[in-house]
Image (cartoon, rainbow, N blue to C red; front, side):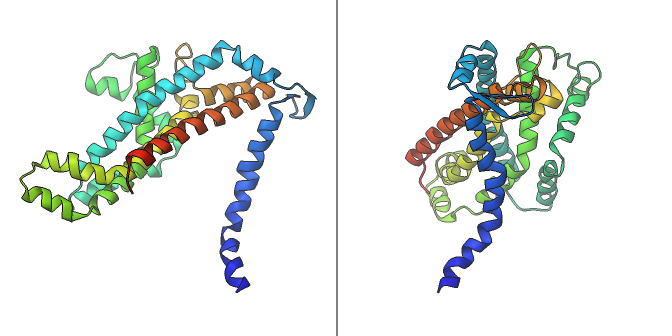
Length: 284
């Protein structure tokens, strides 16, 4: 009997150990470090209570980075959700070409983040980029705030599309056919069937996709490092990228620890509110 009780925990032990070593311990140490002055070697020196947070909350760049993060989230999450819904609706039926479409939309999963960011950086180049050349545009993708933000949004959609498409397509093809057939017998149009029957049935999967998109938007950093480096004029400098600059460029480890703690609190609040709203609105 004891073996049956212990055996399941042995299976999750490796994952639990990895989580403790690489997630929980660094997080707890980061929170503790935010109340200390940290040397250039990473050692905790004198205890400074909330002095690091006082300095952070009087820093205009912190609020600018926070604002940019929310702007990116507001731009990215709806567009990403709408794009994946459109792709699934267009390729929902199984036929000879569906396999081709599925393969094409799975390909972004095989491309590394940094490689994709470099690819998009060249594509959105202002002078000889593919986007401006093919569409005969003259958009200053890296010199103006809004185009620069949109270039990051497009990259984010490209990076997330594979897993989002796979999840939503699987959910779409496994919908309960009974209410759909009943609504068609009652004379509903295809649009009404999708809006009032299929879409509500897809909400649990869509909710998960939106949840992941919010998380990705709050924690975006690497694409910014490669594509825009926070420019132009810090218009794409998000909170996590500000953490990167503080920790690895300026060696302000105490400030970086305070930023990471604030990021965790902000993300936890936003995602908790979202999950509460989800439970009120969605039936599983």
